[in-house]
Image (cartoon, rainbow, N blue to C red; front, side, top):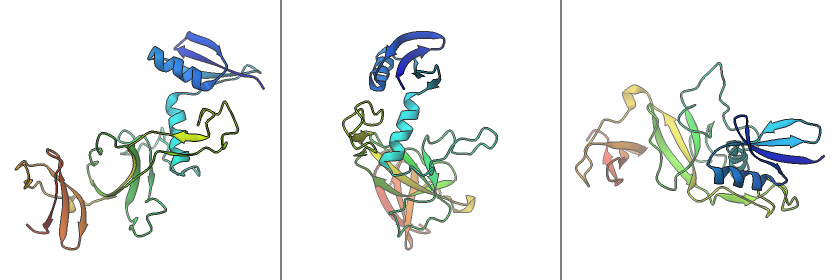
Length: 213
């Protein structure tokens, strides 16, 4: 079946009769606006936005192709719906030594720093990724939208799986002074024995303190 692509901004067609999906996305990026639509031979139309393509790449690179990623529900919103674009319940399968009780894992681009910790949660671990993996098509499909025909699905540098654990209000860390810059704004990264490990929101320095200090 012949498939063509169009770039549209609302009802306005910015470009049409495009044969390769990668070219269609390039046109949309250059224009700075518009969605990519797939037009099949039988007249069917599918909106294939860049966000949908990125989500598929996230699923492939992080091996989450079994439906693990959270889907926003229109009737039952979640507190993380507007916090992270990609996240799932529990911890990564390879993190066998990590207790997954009350944990969620966010898949985020941390190239320019880690995101703020959601209120009521604490960051307990972070695992970096190369941001690339072999495509499911193994380079056998020149017009594959995931790898664009070169056989490698590439997200980019800086992607991590960041694990958070829910904390009770009484367990949330108090605001303490950073020993490096003297500013108030440390947040809890995790606990080890009788010591809490913090990172400063002001200077990004990390330190550890005994519980109760």
